[in-house]
Image 1 (cartoon, rainbow, N blue to C red):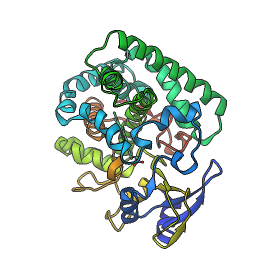
Image 2 (tube, protein in one colour):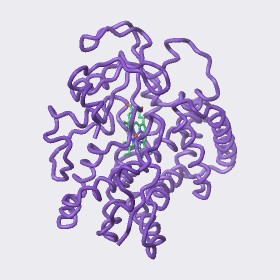
Image 3 (cartoon, rainbow, N blue to C red):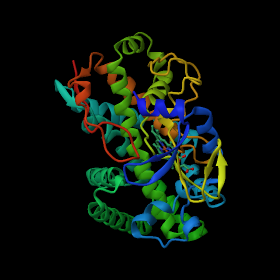
Image 4 (tube, helix red, strand yellow):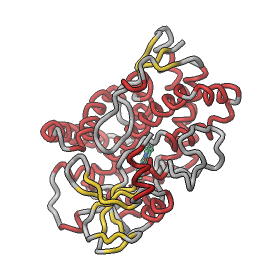
Length: 380
Ligand code: HEM
């Protein structure tokens, strides 16, 4: 499915490539190189260290968080949030996730066709993350508009809209924080606000950064994970049949759909912190470096028959959640949501099929996530 990546991986595994937004980047496409690059802390995340740039409003809301921090800030920021992502805490969400899933599936019960993204893949993760953060889920449609614009606008095409949506988003958070300060609860935002106010472990900018990262990272990737996994299974009826016969394969099935149809596109960017040589290529300080997880996840030296969806693949060491200090903090939550969503969907709709030619599916633009805009399915 990725001929350009395959060619790069075979011929020029660390390649200087022109991106759609006009900048050049080093693309890393082999599995072993990807692992090494993700763990190499000479590739940094906080580009402001390179240029000593002033923050613009656009940059600041995203840049003050763990994903764009290097050591030692990274440890502090991740530490604060990881307290809320303990295995017990995630396991405790299981019943609630099942309940939300069942409600959403009930809502489409009498429909013959459905756009799975709008009806299911989008609402499920946004409801879950909003509940964890203590944000009213009635505001989820606003989040969708804002985060769509920020994510898809990452190719620079809609600068004015992005600016406006970003401001609305920041204003929303400002009002929300105000409310929580007056009346804190047991949710994650309340905990972070305590860290900001009392313990002085978090600056105000970082509070905005961390919360917006959780809202955006917590749902955008998972929407595409659910959509891409269901798509992979309906397109591979033999594998879907196997899953129906052996529902206990659900865990390895979701790992395989993550590998096969990775929900993340170019989100793993880093900058070379100094002039350096990586895999024989001379990189300059400030060069943009992107690890192409999709390409690594289809590397035949790591995965036998990589272009085949095989839900029985054992101990797949796919890189969909990244690796190293920035490895996805939300992976256990995403896995739980995916497992419940996909198992429950096919239990109700075992004969679901694509209701559109595969070639006509419209993919989302932008460089961060990888998924379709709509997934029309015939349910029965
Ligand atoms: C980081 C993928 C779901 C929160 C990452 C990274 C990847 C990733 C590849 C590393 C980026 C890099 O190294 O540059 C995914 C995928 C998901 C998913 C494929 C769904 C299937 C979630 C969820 C949450 C979340 C549900 C939170 C609720 C985060 C955070 C980071 C992160 C906070 C930054 C970690 C750090 O910098 O230390 N994710 N993610 N993700 N993800 Fe996820």
